[in-house]
Structure formats: C-alpha cells, structure tokens
Amino acid sequence: MSTDLSSAEAREARFIRLYETVFPAVARYVRRKGGNSDAARDIFQDALVVYYEKTVAGDAAIHTSEAAYIFGIARHFWSKKYASDTKTTSSDRLLFAAEEPEEHPSVERLTRYLEKAGRKCMQLLQSFYYHRLNMQEIAGQFGFSGERSATVQKHKCIEKLRAEVKQKALTYSDFYE
Amino acid sequence: MNETAHIERYLHGTLSAEERVVFEAKLLIDDELAEKTALQRTLYETVLLSGRNRLRKEIASVDRKLFTTARYSGFRQTIRTIFHL
Image 1 (tube, chains in turn purple, green):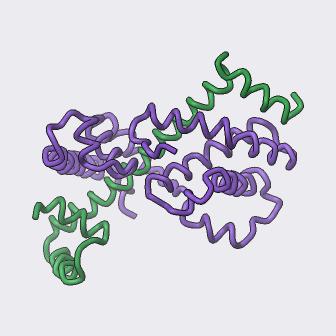
Image 2: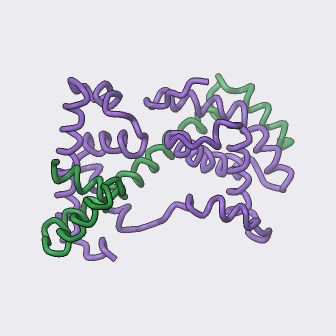
C-alpha cells in the first residue's frame, strides 16, 4: 500500500479506493440500521477525515486493518449522528472523546479572513501542521530551494499571519475566552 | 534560537523542563512575548481547523465524482443494490 498522501491527487486516489473497498460494508450496515444512502455517505465522509488525520499522525492502530478501522469509526458516527436514541457504548465514547471537532465560531471567522489575507502562507502552514509533510516535501511542493529555505519561509509565514491574527483580535473581542 | 521557533516549541511541549521554566518566567514579565505566544496558539488552531475544512471539501468532491460520473456507474450499481433502489 502506498503511504504517500502528500498531494491532493494522491489523497483523491486513496479516497476513491477506500470508497470502492470499504463503503459498501458501511452502506450495508447503515441499511440494516434503517438508514439511507445519504446518511451512509455522510458518516463515511466523517470517517475518512478521522482516518486521514490518524494516518498522517502515524497512528499504528490503522495499519492492523485499514478497512476495520474505517468501518469502526463510521459505525461510531452513525450512533452519534443518526441513532441518538440508541446508546453509544462507554468504550466508544472513550475511544473517540479526543476526536470530537470543537466548534469555535470566532476561529472559523478568523480562518476565512486568514485564507484571504495570506492564502499561500495558509497553504504552507496547513501542509506542515495539518498534512504533516516534512520540510523537504514542502520545499518540493512550494518550489523552495531546500529544507532550510522552506523553514525560513515557514517562520516568516507564522510571523505574517500572527500579525494578521492580532489585527483581527483588535476588531473582535471574543478571540480570547 | 529564533523567537518564533522557541514559542512553537513551548506550545508543542518540546522544550526541555529547564527551558520551559525559563520561558514561563519570561511570559510573566514580558507582555509582548505573552501576546505573541497567545496569538501563535490561535494561529495554530486556525491552521488545523482550516486544513480540516479543506480536506472535507476534497472528500466531498470525491463523493460527488463517485455518485455522478459515468466512470463509476458500476460502483453506484453496487450501492443501489444494497439500498434496494
């Protein structure tokens, strides 16, 4: 199995393969529980996000069985989003407690602003912190001469966007709560 | 070390115990450093959230492709059979 997920194309290929190999089992599960195709597609997308983040973080649990892992997460999202009357088991809750996305309206507003103010910098920082590429891969993708130059750019981007956050913090008082 | 990198190591918990004590002492007396640290923490949260939102869009577009384009009609047939459509 290829482990490269560093480009949007590589991610797309991986997601398509996972739809073809794992989604039918998830669909059958949802069908058995009385759900429809839209619900199955919805929870499968949530499951792929968790799968992706665990994979780039190097979580060993995924490598034992990718399909079983994704199926387990999808089942969790089914209980949580579509079967609120059925109880989620306590072990499920423990397992996923750390992964619930936290919603901060002010952070979302700031996100939209920063994506406009410094698109390229946002992409560079996402590549490093979210997609967890190394400096060599980042240098390749963004056309820097090498790791050293990519590191310098990363620091410049942090400083530039940190200043933008400050600018915005003056406008909205609810950034720090 | 560069200040920005130093703040990052503090926020990511990779300073040594000794370095951390020194850094936290500085935070108490240096308002500018404290502000930069708070802003940088907010920036990291924002980067992670926006990275996740973009990934969601990539996945949604894969979903659309699989459920609309001719190339994947075999896949759709499998799913339709499951839901008896």
